[in-house]
Image (tube, rainbow, N blue to C red; front, side):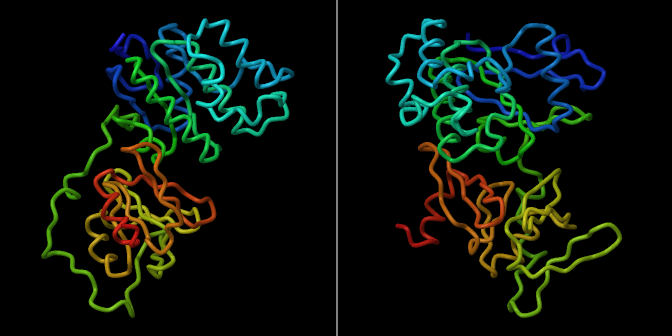
Length: 315
């Protein structure tokens, strides 16, 4: 199976807008939406019985060890890949003898991933697969997605985190009451008007304004962790708090370049002084880990990897 279409008949719900979504077997599709809309989406799919939805809520034997769980599902689903390879693929070799109820959340999540891969479900729908997991677990999930694509299994991932939508999806959408829209460049972010907005010649007195309720707050550029685009408007993130700006990314990018900010992705500008790590998930998938309270991971465009390595003198 290389295609699967989700249409209005399958998602018949008063809480969901009408849309058609075609899933291809060689690409991963992500849909960014709030948790309430996710619940309606999942309930509609499960009601029609057209797709398996994996939400890491049930299906493991918690008193059994990791090894026993994997071995059981390996036999149950008649999975052809040898057991030792499954343990290595999901980084479970060091916790094989632990009962599930003593494992960390990330270890449990990797057991779920292994079960889902071995199940052979077509198509495959994941709900919040990376919520609260560590880097190792994120890496195993991305590796698993490559396995699904090799097998031409359509994959849909529902997330409430824009960073996850961009990291995991070959094609990403945003689902709102107004409908399903592809996440792509805003028109005013594509066109660079070099005469309208000039970077300040001096870093002495420049402040970045953000509106909070009826107040205008001025921030020092060096306070900012990163800036992301939401519906064509820029949102400034400082210590995990977001502040709306009266600018697009293209406008603020020119002003902040002199302070060491960098457009690492079509939807993100980062403060390079707060970048802690460059993460390589696969040969074409990268992220920047920020040195902030939540250690945010920001997508890094594959076309920008060489440029940012040069900025940090890594090449």
